[in-house]
Image (cartoon, rainbow, N blue to C red; front, side):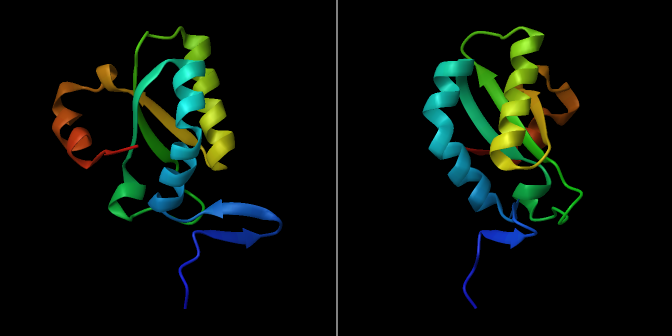
Length: 112
């Protein structure tokens, strides 16, 4: 059986794997860099660990900016990524991670 990265379900595309998330982010990386001044972007959490659920898991994305955005730009980026990935995105700024979680998150993040 071939490995499908996307499954069709009632005419909507559902993300299944980290590989598909990475492919979409890579495809849009330059646009994201220019529009949102992103320096670095990566995925962490359940999709990296292979623990995502079919319907309930959001996509955890770690981001670092060249220039810190205001709250409106940050929310716009989170919404934009949710539309691109067709999944709810939990966007986390690298500098905003609590000290006790840094090692865990930084060690599992897959950067694009």
